[in-house]
View 1: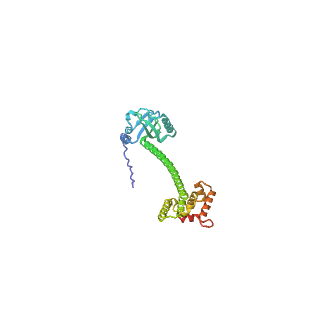
View 2: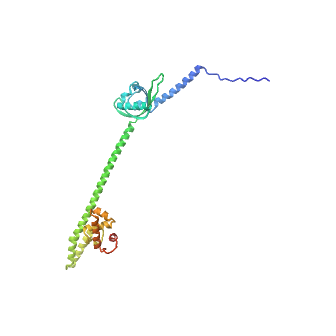
View 3: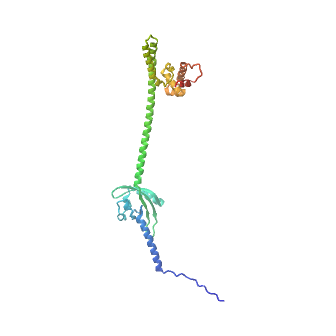
Length: 302
C-alpha cells in the first residue's frame, strides 16, 4: 500500500513594494493622528534646543498669547524669560533630574505683559539625525496665580479684621467692667447719702408732733425714697441700712457666692480685711453667735 505524500500549503509572500506601501500608509496614518493632536492640544507643546532655540511649538500658543507660531520658531526662548535667574534655575533643575513637572516660571510677551506658566519638560536624547532637545508642555496659570494672590490678600485682610475685633472686644470688656464698677460706686454713694442725710431726718420728724397730713406726707416721702433705692439694694433686707458702703459690697459678693480670696481681689483689699468685714456684717445681722451661713441668710432677702 503506497503512502501519499502530504504537501504543505505555503502562503504566498507579499512583494517588497507592497510591504513598503503598507508601512508608508501606517506611518502616514500615525503622522496624521499625531498632527491632529499637535494642532488641537490645549496646552502649549514645544521643542527647544539646549541652546534655547525654539525648534517647534504648537499652534495653541496663538490662543494664549499674541505670538504667531511661525514667528517664534527659530527665536531664542531666552528672550522671553522675565528674569534670567529663572532660566538658570530651570536649566539646572532639568539637567540634574532629566525632567521637571509643574515647574513655575514667569515669561513676558512682546508687549512686556507678564504671565506665569507651569512647565513639564524632559531632555530628549539626540540621534544620528537629531541633536538632543528639551521637549514638554507649558500651561498659562496666570489666572490661577491671580486668584491665589487675591485669596491670600483676603485671608490677610480677614486676619487683620479678626485681630481688630479681638482688640475691640477686649476694650469693650474693660469698659463694661469699668461701667459696672462705676455703677456699684454710685449705688454706694446713694445709699450712704440716704443713710447719713435723709433717713436720720425722717426718723427725727417721726418723733415730732405732726398733723395727719404731715404724717401722710412723711410716709409718702419715706416710701418714695425706699422705692428709689430698692433697685440699688437688689431687694435685700432693710438690715442693709445698718451696713457701711464697703460692708454692702462685701455682703453682695458673699451673696453671689464669691470666696474670701475672690472678694479681696475684686475689692483690692486683703483677705484679712474681708474677714473683718464679714464678721461685722454677721454681728449687725444678728448672726455673730449663730452657726447659720451668711450667704444663705443673705439669699433669703433676694
